[in-house]
Length: 255
Image (cartoon, rainbow, N blue to C red; front, side, top):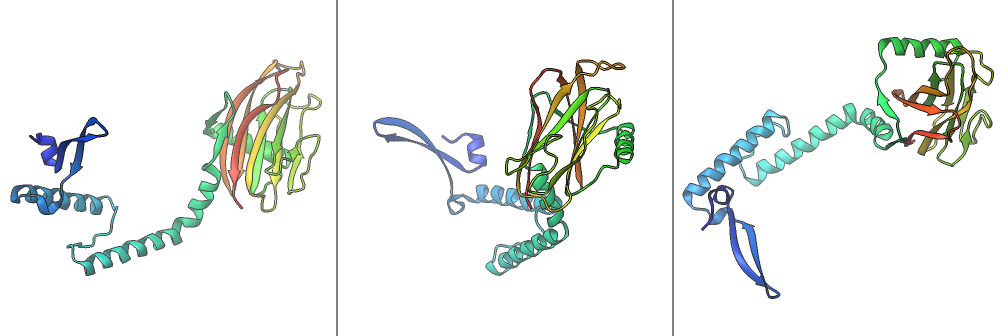
């Protein structure tokens, strides 16, 4: 006998013998096989589903009565709504997805939202050093006299760093700091002023030199700004002197 839950949703079960094994098979009933009471219950649930679609804007408020003409009009209206939405928001959404759709964080690295004070600090360092900006901007900052180095690996596997400041694909490092311990609020910067190449970009940090000046310790906390198509994201991590290159984040960009 069918249980109450199965009856509510119009399910049937039967026992079948397949390859010498007994199997319990569950299958859906067809509308035309329902009795009057079951059909009335199904119709109420179907109407409620339609109301939910309209309430939550999952469909336009079109009366779909079941005839082919009305259903065709409903389908045309949905397609029109989709095109209207894409015209209004499609480009912005696609650029967002190009940046945020494929990210890989390094070990111990986390995404952060900068406080107002941190945003002001970043803006002040950017202005002080005259950082260049572009379609891609990657900035590394930390708060002591140590010498950290920013590395960016391009989609064509070129390295941009203090050792090789320009790539053939248009990337450029314009600021490198603390080879000598001159600042306890340093910042380094890599940009693509023109349209960047499509592909995966990998950002790494290296603790090059521990300058024993001020409160500098052999472990340093850093922050990273990654800006793509005008959208910024921020990351933080720690690195120890003597450790190898540390992966911070990789991200995919489409042209």
